Every structure is written in C-alpha cells, then in structure tokens.
Length: 467
Image 1 (tube, rainbow, N blue to C red):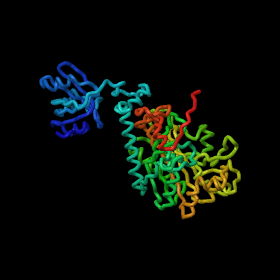
Image 2: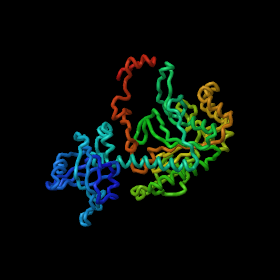
Image 3: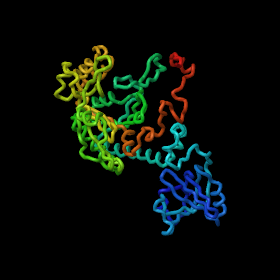
Image 4: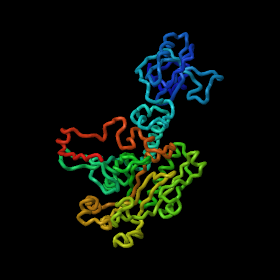
C-alpha cells in the first residue's frame, strides 16, 4: 500500500492507509496504547486497540524516535473527543499493522520539546536530532518558503538567475578572505567569494540587465550572534536604474514576500532616514522602531538608511571605503571625488535596509566609469599600478560599454531571524558552525592536512607555540 503523508489523513477518513515517520511519544494506558507519529507534514495520534493483539504487542515494544511504518484506519473522532488544541485533533489513526524500519538509541536530549534550553554544543553536535524539533522544522520551512516566494516574484519581474564562481580572486570588500590552495599552480591561492560583487557588475556589462542569485557569501570575520563565516544572500543587480528604482524594486519584493507569508509591515512605503539622522536619533545605523506591543506581535519595522559617508579614516590616518569601493558618489559629489577634495564630506549612493534592529540588506548604485573608480582607489592610497593589479579587469570592462547599474544583497538569515523572532544566526541555518568557528556535526574542521596533501599542494605549515 502506497504511503501517504500525515497532512493527507483528513482527506482519507474512513479508509485504510499507510503512514510512516518518527515516534514522537508513546503512552501506555494498558488496554489502549497511544503513539504520536510525526513526519515532515505534521503529527497524528494513533491508537492500538486490545482486540488487535498483534498491533497491541507491536505498539507496546516501540519507543520514542523509532522509525516505523503503520497500516491502519483513519477514523473521525466523536465530537465529544475532538481536541482543538491538538494537531489533527479531530481524527485518530487506528493501528492495524506496524513495521519497525529502524530502532533508535535514547537521544542525548528530547527532540519533541523546544531545544533552545539544551546546551548549544550538544545541539550542534547532534544537529540532525535538533532539526527534528518543531521549532527548528518551522524555521527551516519558513526559510525555504521565503526564498521560494522572493525568487518567484523576482523572476516575474524579469530577473535572470545566474550562478557566479566560488573559486575566485581575492577582492577588496572589507573582510578577510578564506583562501584555497591550488594544486595545479603551487604556491598560489584562490579566494572564496565574500560576495558576487564584481561578477554581477560584469553581468551588467554582458547585457543581462536584471540578474539575481541565491548566493553563498564566505567571510573570515569575527563571529557573533548575527554573523557567521557563511551566509546566504538574495543578490540582485539592475541596469539603467537610479537609486529610486532599486529601492522601489527591493521594497516591492520584500513587501510581496513577507505579506504573502502572513507577516505585518509597520509602515509602507518604508521610511527613509539619512545616516546622519540615524546616528543622531538612534546612535547606530541599524535600529528598531517598534513599540513594545509591536515587538510582542511580530510586526516588521523596515526602514532605509541613505546618504552614507563614502570614506572613513583608517588607524594610520589614510582613507578607506565605508561600505563598498565600487559605489558611486551622489551626483553632486562626483566632482569632489574626482578632485580628491573634502573627502570626509563625500556621500555615496549606498542604501541599507534595516528591520527590527538588524541590517537586512545593503547595496548601492555602482561606479560604471573608469575615472570614478580610479579616483576612489587613489583616495584610498593606491598607486596606478596597485589599482590596475586590484581592479584592472573592472576598469577594462568599463571601457567596453558599461551601463549605469545598481543592486543589493538581502541577507536571508537576518531576514528569517526577523520573521521568527530568533536572535542568533545559528537558529535559522541547518548546519551552523560553533561559536569558535568549528564544524559541529563533522567535528574535524578546521583540521590539519596530511603530509601527502601538503606535499601535493606544495605547502609548508609553520606551527606557532601556544602561549
């Protein structure tokens, strides 16, 4: 008999069907044995009646987290036995035959409760068990629904989904790169992408006009609750646009997606606040505008932060970019950039999307002119030769007909944190790293390479003494 999912039981009342899943809990009342079974679609109460001795004996031997397949009758509960607080509380599954597919050891923690209070190291070590819990199942499904809905909307707006390389060159985008040694080019290294920034700009040069990607971004930066080595972003870029065009497209995408998922947005259109105003009012460029009542009800308070300073002072007294060296200044400040004057006053076309105290996305109108990008790198202290070495391929692309363009990267994890109310990235990722940056389920990374691997790569490792 073909297996059906638990969510389909209500459509099969009065029929004999087969379901399968994990034993959530077993309750032995002597004559009656109850088992709550769950699968990816939900949970249902099953009962073994005493006159069916074989099923009764089988049910008596079963324990939590065993994987079983059950044939039985789908019965509608009498009105007086309907439990509105219980999932599928209006039906009951009468077990006729049970097949044990796989027994299970006693888990290191209960998975049929909220595991938030369980020691995090244990949760991450046994993440595949943690992911069985109802909260984590909800988080992962919501993440998938958000991505699907946003992707569907953007495709309807003419965006083309294009993948960009994971093995690339080191780029000046603010964080440290993770590097990968090359076996075929000993002594040389690839970098893993901090973002698809340069590739998506080159796609604008290629004439695609509207690009999108579910992009993995990998950055060797200090870890914290809302930041990890790896994250996913909805990356998009548009040609022949102004800042207003990009902001409107992103705002429409977010509004369509989160409202379709059932969430409430505090204010539409999203308020716009300058960086200067944000720092004066909130003391930060990411802030939470909600009232206590709105926090309690899960309202989403989106806002745009605009008019960022292009440059900031380095520790050595020089200048570096605040967000992205590939941004354009606001139109009236292009002359200042080209002349290298009043550098602290130059504003950029950078825009950040903030929500409930988190930065949910960031982007800008990009430089599409050689003189603007060269001037940006000159202000940062690069010689012509160093600029050519760093971004010469971009400068050359500008000379082959680069359209004006801009885009944004929307953080998937930060957005799902806002939707779920979670306060840590790890709660909305399937297999996150530990706080110390180690893999959790596969407990050997970062790890040492064998002598053979090092020889093949032409690498010598110098170990430092532990202080």
